[in-house]
Every structure is written in structure tokens, then in C-alpha cells.
Image (cartoon, rainbow, N blue to C red; front, side):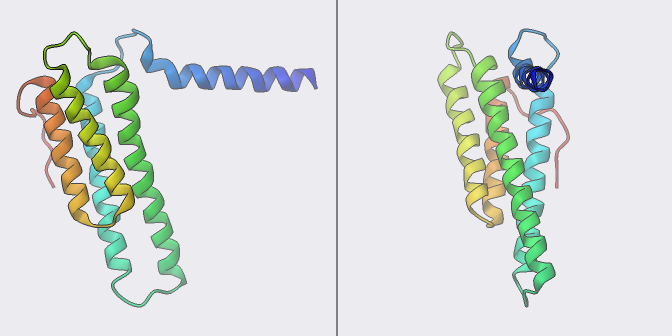
Length: 153
């Protein structure tokens, strides 16, 4: 029994360290990659919304219901990933109070979180477009320039 408790305790301790890894000053993570990952998540949300609308356009059978559930879960997962990136990477670490662009960056980060929430609540493709715009607006507020990576649909 004690051995099992030690194993569980070790796993929980490791899991919390792994989750918090990016909040130690290791210098491994990069801003550019965070933006690219959020845009990839946004594109997945957009695809999920398109598929949901297609699946509900005709007769709904058991297979459609199954796929609808999967697309909703995917949409939720990717919207949550974006919210977690904003909260645990940008807001907790990268957006600094002493930065003259603090309010602009914080406002833009908050807009990304709100748009991700709207994507969870809706299957309207306009919400994914709004999220994409919010991510690009955050990039502009954060980097002070136009995005310099290829992202197009």
C-alpha cells in the first residue's frame, strides 16, 4: 500500500512540475511558436465548425450524432488550448506590468480568450474568424509589427 501511495504521489508531483514547466525561466519556449500553435488551434476550430454545420444540414443518423459529438469535443479542446496558452504563457509570464504596451497587450490577450470562449459556445464560422483576427491583433500588440509567418486558409 505504501509503495502504491509513493508511486501516485510521485506521478502527481511530476505531473504538476510538467504542467508548470513553462513557468520557470528555462528559455526553451518561444513566442513565435505560441502564436503558430494558437493559429493551428484556430484552424482546427474553424474546420470543426464547418463539419458541424455540414453534419446538421441533412438527416441526422447515429453516425452523424457520433461525429457531431467528436467535432464538438475537438472544438472545445482547441479553444481551451488557446485559453491556456494565453493564461499560462502570455499573461502569467510574458506580458509585463512595466511594459509601456501593457494595457494594449493585456486587452488584446483578453480578446483572444473571449473569442475562444465564443467558439466554444457556437458553431458559427464567424466566431473562428473573429478568433483568428484576435490572435493577429495580439501579435501586433505584443510584437509591435505585422505577423511575419505564413498563415492562410
